[in-house]
Length: 214
Picture 1: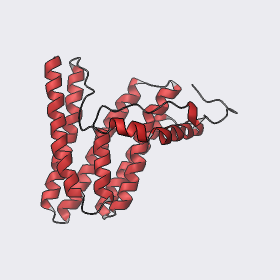
Picture 2: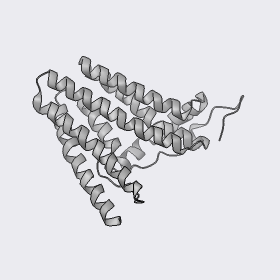
Picture 3: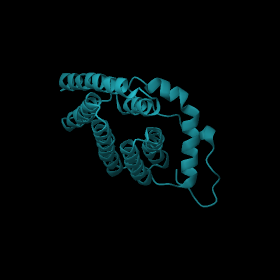
């Protein structure tokens, strides 16, 4: 559906429900965020913003998040991360609703998601290491490797014709966990431990699934 001049703003009740993620938090997020998702989607469609603009804005906000992490402003970083994640969710939603889904857009979104992960966890590694928190910095580095491995396993599986959607701890779960670590004092180390361990479980889960199907 394409917008035309003079068209009324989309009605929230007419918007589709959010897609369910296959990760641990997917079902709860789909239920809790259903109404806000529809309201934000209706607003974005009314503004006529393009999907690729949301994708690029998400990356720019990830840069802001990393900058604020390095500056030690973790609450501000958390707020910027919320904005970045919102853009990341809705670029695909806007494209689907308008019938503008393209392979080029999916490719750009996937690549920039990986770039965003590298920015966030590299900045976190640098900030924690500079502050003398060597264990936490090491955990941030492990989490970066694990998060990239989760995506790489899926990409390699798709290259041999195997489709993977499962995974206990995917991008949504990483986003929510990192948000908790940034917004709640003293929670970064437990969050990084969870990200490293559960992300590792997801890598093994996807790797086994790919090998079984192949």
